Length: 266
Image: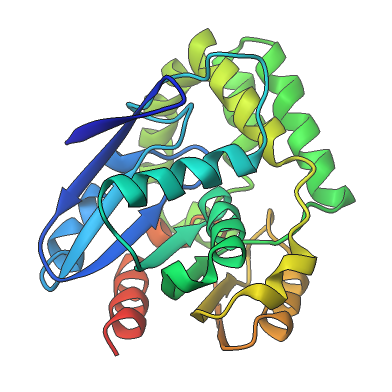
């Protein structure tokens, strides 16, 4: 567990194992801890690099009012330079996938393979409405309201029904966090950083072998937008997971691990 400095911000990262480097990028509400349950399998034959974006986990809160997703992209570039990683493999989900798209299109020679779980290259009117709901819920400073506005749409109805105890335990864990004003301020900046995202025209610049993974019950990331990415990214494959939602790595953990290792190491 280490830190490096980026524009006067401490950035937290973790490295596990040896072998082909695989960088895993967080979704918007995630941190490096979110991936620890997968490390035993993922790090057997690969060097796993986890990183908290600015305003996530153990990285610093942003020392200003506002930034865009490209601020996170350039942080990644400097982290890779700092770690002397000339070329990497990236597995990512949601917000992390958007940063991965931006990085891979701007620095195509630095990415060998790219995996995008539940990721879109642009924010449409429907997703903007969802983000506006999150922002409004955050303004209430009420953890239960924020939970109800955000979490139900992240998981599939199938998972919710089958894992109701897990979801209720999750609720007890998250509501206190969602009541914290510092956390809510961080979430507001993270949401605003991606709210006007549009990387669609940059997709043609990506040269890495790419795996796009969508879910049939993803209520945040339209399947159509992921199919469009598949058409635009030259060397891409597309997989649709049945009966899974936006948080596909938690709903289908064994499949998540298999897809990553199978694609990265073949």
